[in-house]
Each structure stands twice: as C-alpha cells, then as structure tokens.
Amino acid sequence: MAQKELVKNEELFTLNESLAGSYLQGFTYPWEALSGIHDLILKLGAGLPKDRYDQVAEDVWIAKSAKVFDSAYIGGACIIGERTQVRQCAFIRGDALVGDDCVIGNSAELKNVIIFNNCEVPHYNYVGDSILGFHAHMGAGSITSNIKADRTNIVVKGETAYETGRRKIGAILGDWVEVGCNAVLNPGTVVGCRSMIYPTSCVRGIVPCDTIFKNTGEMIEKK
Image 1 (cartoon, rainbow, N blue to C red):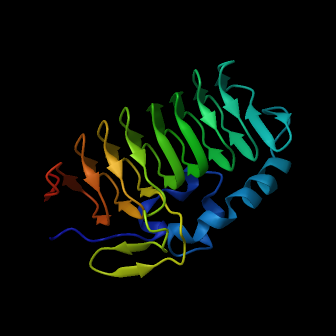
Image 2: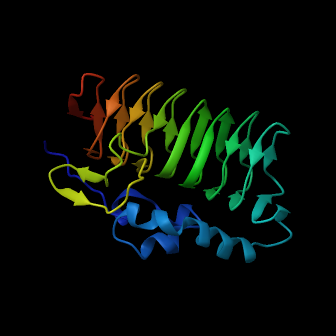
C-alpha cells in the first residue's frame, strides 16, 4: 500500500492536545508510555489549578466545568478535563487521564488510558491499556481487547514487527480516527491518523494513516 505505517507518538498525536503531551514526547512509541500512566496522573494532579479543578477523592481530580452523572463511578488515579461529560453508569476503574471536551458515555469502561481532548467514547465501550488521540471517536459497542488468549507478550505487527514486552496493550488510535459500531480492536492494534474502521470489523496489527479498514479485512486508501 502507498500509505505509510506511522506509529511513533509524534506521528500519531497532536501532543499539545493532552496534559500527557510532554510525557509522551519522552517515548518513541505509544505503548512504551502505558506503564507510567498512574504516576503521571499523580504528578499532574498535584499541580492542577484549584480554581478550575476539584479533588473529589483520593487521587481523583475533576474539572469544575465537567459534567459527571451521579451513577458514574470514578476510581483513582484519574483526571477528568474541562467541559468533559461522564455519563450515566460510566465505570472509570482508575489510571485514566481524560482530556477536555470529551464524552465518556453510558456504561463505558476505562482502565489505564490516555484520552486526548475532544475524544468520544460514547456508548457501551471498553477501553483498556490504550491511548486515544485528538478527536478520535469510538462507535457504540466498539471495544479494545487488551490481552491475548495465551497471555503471551504482544507484538505490534505491520510491515515491521514491534516487540513490546507487554502482556497488555489495547489499541492506539491516532488523531481523528473513526471506529465503527461493534468493532473489535485486538491487542496491539494501531490505527493511524484520520483512518476509518468499518462497523463490526475485527482489527489487528497496524492500519496506516488515511486508510479505510473494511469489515472483510480489506484496507483501501481514504480519498
């Protein structure tokens, strides 16, 4: 294919669209940053401006302008950004850095994630051990699968095979990625910027930037 497999942090993300931007600059590949999310949130939380954020529980900071429904559960460590909505029955298990103007929807579950600004995880989604870029959107029922059935370490596979040394990696979505309803992103999936995943697809490996992934597994260049 003509599209390039762009899998480095600087290629996937607009880094100034997340509080984690400087942190991610310290790594080449996004999966290298997953093990430090907990400590990153604690460091960032301690420095958040008190006129814009409330510390509502141990290691949990929520922007005053955010809307969190009473039925949502938020465990630490966690930061919820400004104007973000955390809707009914959302389950944030912890180690979640959620940006500004995001939607964490009804019955969505987050664990060990970085969610960039303007990202939407709106309905019945599971996102674990993952990074979702600026303006990424996951359709209803789409999920990240973050561990292999045989529990062996995950290899990110494309034109190059990247040995990650990690047993748990969900998905890495670049900026402006669209994931269709009920798609499954298998462990170690990387979707490049502006790419689209068809509904009900089963995706694994690297989807290059500006690509349409069809539910037959075919990939075509996005016009």
